[in-house]
Image (cartoon, rainbow, N blue to C red; front, side):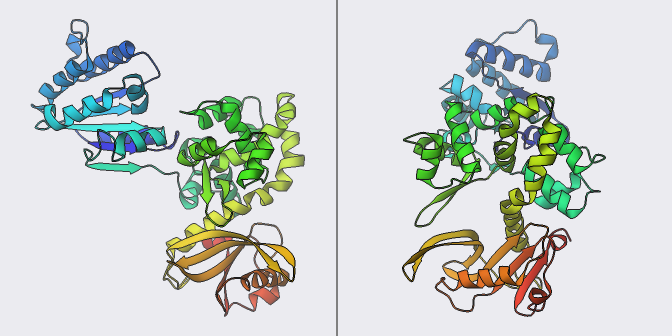
Length: 436
């Protein structure tokens, strides 16, 4: 038994179909939908008979899932069979006994068969809590389980191989590395042409309906989620700020659901704050939704050129930080980055200095367990990293409880002469280093 789960459009079904194609045995593929129990039973019965006994499809009927599963068990005693239930959460939600029935089948009916069961689902919270958690009936039954992630910035670049590294990074930034989103980018068109066609056109792929599907899933009250995501996209990241901007009194449930669904990330600290981990949604709520009237009037391209494009580098700031973080993890204890770290986080704090409250923000703070290892700054902009930028970082580091902390810098356009001269003391990286 295998459990595969992850957000929509990551390629779970494609991956599993490839696995099935690579195995020369019979396979049953059933995709559950939000239908009544009887319709689901009929649909699964047809899928089973099509795979195992197509000549019997019109003459055999199963009046329960238990009998259908018994039939599969008998067939799997004779030969190897793969049985994949895609979007399993829809089946289990409609048939609330399904988890317990599958537990019985795995423990008894299918135990001595040659069946390979695959449960796949896009509702991340459900799959984690109702299938894999210790309180779930199926707990401990899977021989393998994994959560499919989006592609890395380097993997995403393969969809647009002829783009320069800056444009590759922006493609990653507006798609979040989701394969289905990356597929919408035509590598023969320019970055601007692709963004205008897919985001700022009435017939673009990233429609209002797609966004509703992306954030709704198993969650009710989509307008509340829209308001909260929009608030965070506009820079309000702390609980009270989000609640006030969204016009809501209680948002804990919604925030927890968004974190559970991998749409938000919660950053711990004295004052926890939230960021949108799904960068496509952050781009959409930051720019596309706010230009809806112009897009509907056929002026989306002009809106992009005049309003959005000049702000792309600002938007890419947090994306670039994430790319830098991944680069450092990938190159730990190497000539490029000779340190070992267990975590790299964004740092925010408020401190009092000479009676004045200062906001301290550091893009990258690396730790080995509780020991501070380095502090880092990332600049995704058309100007070089200046000496003043370096001085600002050094001033912020003074408030950390460690002296002489190594500094690590990332810059899109390189470094001013005075900063470059510090190369022996400070680690300096450019966008090209990230893609080597």
